[in-house]
Image 1 (cartoon, rainbow, N blue to C red):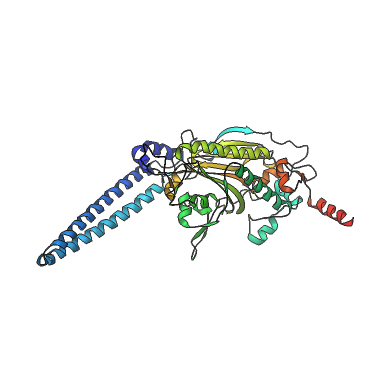
Image 2: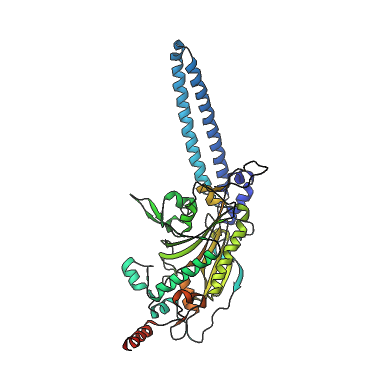
Length: 439
């Protein structure tokens, strides 16, 4: 939820943010009125309850012969308090509902509009040129014996797959490369839960307009499968006062992720670009609000270091407000060039959620004391960003493919693959094994 003080004191700022996202500005006025009604109802309830407490003391002190006459007044006042409490609760629920329609206030400079209104900030690296007809990642993966979509569909349905042999090794290598990058930059590695409670999913903002993307285990469980370890990591410090005296808290969460891909029928049905299950190493940061924008740029830099080291051509975009998602105040996507599509495709995103998630999950920190007096706690800012994920295999295979179906391994990945420099076609691997076995 947004800062109520900001809503009350700078409503025009919130209106501009909603407009930039393509949302109805009237939601701001509705939230202001609902908040006012909540406060009025709460004050009325608290005044009546104070009156009830004072009257109770009066009755307790009254002579026995007068107490009987006061009983009717006690009952009448108790009923008024009960009704006022119900009104206050209803007003609080209405205010919560109205406030939930206000998405995080975008940061100055974020482009307005929707998916097509992003701003390209820079391009890095040369797109690969081939003197042969390049194969797409699935064809390469099948040649290498690395990707098996047919059996994935047989076992689990459309948009599932098996990574096998060198495909499995390649993903693990990518994830370990990312993990080492995270460790070198003061991130604490985490293996996170992939099932979370509703209040955690709600707190991170994933149960809004995109709730149909989330798998839900209902009935006896009432748990959600996460689409990113961001969810579990955001909930890690729920209802806590964290210590930021020595700097930001940085976590790197390794998890399997699940997405229903609702509304994507017919899109990216070939290969592993848009699938229901994948692995990801996600950076997550708790910091103070003043340092959040600098931390955001730091996360982008780490992502760029990874993609540059892997020899991928990419661009960085400033995502438009209408495509941010409810929690992000700014998001940078990095898209790698996919040769057979002749287009850039998203490999990473990193979001600055300012204090939006922390307010929902009540994660705070205590600033340094001022003049010896303890400072009031403040909500932290949260940020997240991808450092490696399954989809990266798409760009790696297509970018580094050779005419014979083999794939060059970027030098930075070779130590994680036992020194392997070239991924050979499966048929050639089998022939090599036979020759080796005959010696």
